[in-house]
Length: 236
Ligand code: BV8
Image 1 (cartoon, rainbow, N blue to C red):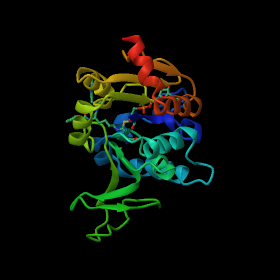
Image 2 (image 1 turned 30 degrees about the horizontal axis):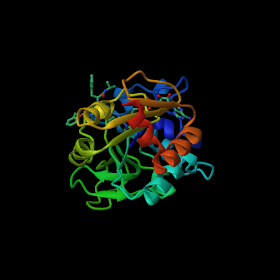
Image 3 (image 1 turned 90 degrees about the horizontal axis):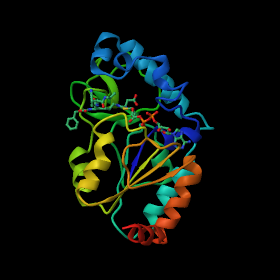
């Protein structure tokens, strides 16, 4: 499984490319690249401080799509891996365990000198001293920016090579390498499925469209009852 910002939209977390999306207010290169951070660390820390504060608001909670994925993982007796492009902790809070946040996590920070990662829920500033080396200016979000290599890639590519069903949920398919995962899975023989608000036209074998809180629980309960697998066999 692969999720993107659309799975968290109904929890109140703004997606990237919607009309009022995150990238409308900021240029990617200014707030989500190592060059942007080197140029203006205060701007980048403020960008992530605002998103961290928003994520920690009491009204921001896992939605029915997050919960359906955690329930499927618990009840399904086959192999399951959930790769998320999202940096929120909603999958984790919903109970997902086999979870690989390939773009990092908003509630973690990293020392640029030692590479050590720390849980962190508060704001971070240039003046914040690092828990490991006590230096200021050492900390950055533990997040994969554009131009950086995403996390867990070896494990992800191995899973794409061996999975029977690949499901992409709530992603526009604009960002690589995640945007190419369904092609890799398909080339290795998997059936590929898109669950999204609208069809992205990216060549999936099957698609179900609508809000994630409606489409995801419905799809995964049918998958669990293996109706989906029979349906795929009928289509072949
Ligand atoms: C890399 C963390 C090398 C930051 C993010 C030219 C061509 C191809 C590639 C490139 C290129 N130039 C540069 C690249 C590489 C670049 C890239 O892809 N750029 C793009 C802009 C072209 N990629 C990289 O740099 C990556 N690194 O390539 O390294 C490498 C790779 C592999 C192995 C070795 C070396 C690193 C990219 C990571 C960037 N960091 N996030 C942060 O969050 O601040 S990416 C960021 O955008 C998000 O994390 C997210 O992953 C990503 C994609 O966004 P989506 O999740 O898809 O969100 P979006 O808003 O776009 O879409 C939401 C979807 O949900 C929509 O379809 C919508 O319809 C739907 N939806 C909305 N509401 C609902 C819904 N669906 C259901 N229900 C709803 N209610």
